Length: 68
Image (cartoon, rainbow, N blue to C red):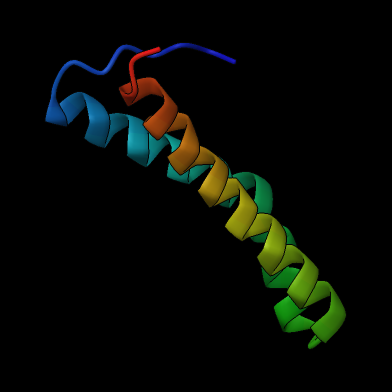
């Protein structure tokens, strides 16, 4: 995992935009395909993966803010 130093609000905003782009790129395509095919089982699975990726990103930020 790459470490990024966030020293300002604009640094955080840039990081958040980049992480969102990564998540959508890696998880969004599967979600869109499942939705287009009306495959409810695949849609549920890919939605869960997308949600987990977003949660993991938020925990990543939180862990970086909390001092050890």
